[in-house]
Amino acid sequence: MAETKSSRKKITFIGSGSVTFTRNLARDILSFPAFADCEIALMDIDAENLELSRKAVEKIITDSKTNAIVTATTDRKEALKGADGVLCTIECSDDRTTASDVNIPLKYNISVNIGDTRGPSAIFRFMRTLPFMIEIVRDIEKYCPDAVFLNYTNPMAMLCRAMQGISDIKVTGLCHSVQGTAGMLAEWIGAPKKEITYLCAGINHQAFYLKYEWNGKDAYPLIRKAMEKPEILNAEQVRNDMFLHLGYYVTESSGHNSEYVAWYRKRQDLLEKYCTHGTGWNPGHQRKPATKAHRNENRRKEFDNFIANPVDLRRSEEFASYIFNAVFGDNTMFEFNGNVRNYNLIDNLPYGACVEVPVVASKGGLKSTHVGNMPPQLAALCNISSRCEEMAVEGALKGDKEMIYHACYFDPLSSAVLSMEEIRNMVDDMFVEHEGWLPMFK
Image 1 (cartoon, rainbow, N blue to C red):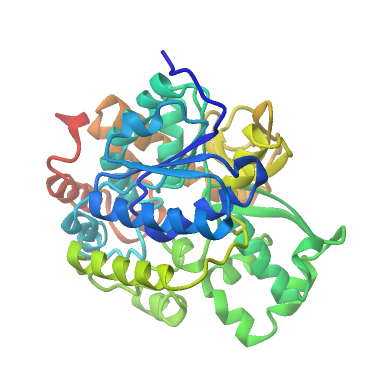
Image 2 (tube, rainbow, N blue to C red; image 1 turned 90 degrees about the vertical axis):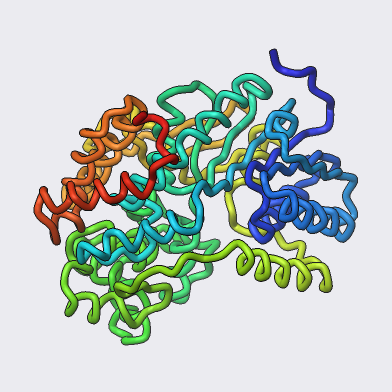
C-alpha cells in the first residue's frame, strides 16, 4: 500500500552522490513556483557524498529564497515513500570492472571510446545495473506507484526497455543530447534557438533530426553550407561525416557514435583520421581504474567551490523539471524526447523495442507521439542496434547467456573487427571479469 500523501510535493533522487548533477536538477526544480515548498529527498549508499549533496541543495534553497526542504537518507525505501517524482542517476560497478569495459575489448583490438550505451561493453554495464534497477522499480510500485520515474543512467535504451517490460509504472529515460545538439546546429547557422523547431526520432544516442527548421524552413542546406568552414567540419568529425553520407544529423556526440557503427574505429588509420583529434576521444588507449579517493577529492573540490560562490539560479535545458511541472506542478504541457517502448511509434523499427521519440507531458501523464517510418538508411542503422539491445534485454531477464553472445555477435564494431569465435572469447573474458555482478546467470 502507498503511504498517505501530504500536500507538499516530493521529488526523490536515487544516486544523489553526483553533487553536480544533483544540484543542477534541484535548482531547476526549485525554479518552478509549483515546487517552491517541495521536499527534495536525496538517497545514496555513500553517506559522505550524500552529505555533500544535501548541503549543496540546502544552499540552493537558501539562495533561491524558497520554502522547500531537503532530506537525505541511505534508505531507498524511506526516500521513495510518497514521492511524486523520482530521478535515477546510479552507477553500479567497481573501479576495476568499469575499466575492463574498455580494456578487455582493447585486448581483442576493439577500440572502445566510452562503452556506456551499446556494444559488449554497454551490454555488461547494463547487466550489472539491471538487478538494482529492478529493485528500484519494485520499491516504486510499493511506495509511490503513481510517481513519474525519470532515468538518467546508461545504457539508457536497454535499462528503460527492461523496466518497461516488467512494470506499468510511468518510467522514461532522458538524454540531454537532443536539445544540446539542436542548440549546437543553431549556433553553426547563426539562428536563435527559440526560432528552431525539429522532429527527432530513432533510438537513444542514435536519434536523428528528421526535420530541422528555422522559422518553418528546412535548415539542412544551411548546415551543409556551414560545414564548408573547416572549424565546423572538424568540430564533429564522425557525425558530420555521417550527416554528409546519410542526409540527417544524429543527436549524440562523435565520440559516442564512433563506437556504435562499423565505419570509424576498426583500423588504426581510421582512428587517426576520425577519432583522435577532437575532444572527448579515447583513440584506443587502456583505461586506468579510477580510485574512490581520487573521485572524492575532485568531488570535494567542486563542492567547496560551489559553496563559496553565489548560486546561478538560471534554469537549465534539462527536461526533468519541466516534465515534473507538467505532470504534477502547474500542468503546463511540455514536449520532450523520451525513451519508450515502440508500440506503433516508429513503424520500421522493432515492435516493442525501446525508441526515442517526442513525448508530451501533461496532467494526464506521458503520451508518446507516432512518428511513422524513418528514412530507410536510418532505419537500417538503428535496426541493428535495436535488435542487439532486444536480445541483450531478453537474455538478461531470462538468464540466457546464449542470447548475450548473439547480441554481441551482431554489434557493428565488434563484427567489423572480429570473427564470431573471437567475439565469443572476448565475451567469455567479460563474463569472468563480472563474476559476482550477474546473479541472473547463477
